[in-house]
Length: 171
Image (tube, rainbow, N blue to C red; front, top):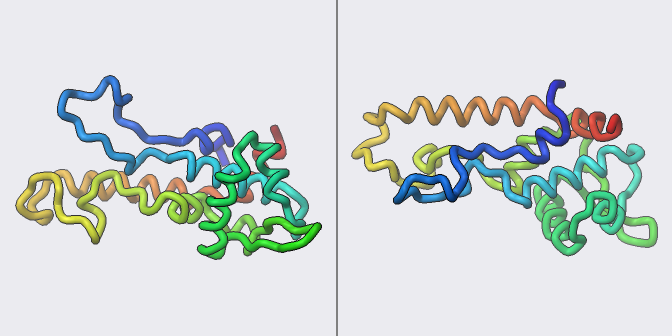
């Protein structure tokens, strides 16, 4: 696996910085991985790097990763609802992965926390074409955006939580 933890945790696809944008550019967050995705991924890497089957207290994750415990609570709640983690109550409680780390892809985690990684709105089934084309069937750029979407998802699916946990342990 040729991806380092710093590459994945800082992963963001941006065409330009906001200040360098052409006049009239509309900024959307579609392809930028927010702190939700980055911090949630870091928390899950932390859990996966611990002894298999052990509960990891949120305060320990927050301390090791330098993240807000309150913010992590929100993220873990979302991941729990999606079945990625489960929580254990009590003095020895915390969070544990619901499946083996090799069965959880970075793509799954980011989709839970960020939603679909569409580069343009028209690829979403819920959005109306917003590119100005009368019909998506006549849009010459749509195949390009579909290929980009597919490529990004292939990369995210090819990397498991175990891959990143192993890289984390080597640091």
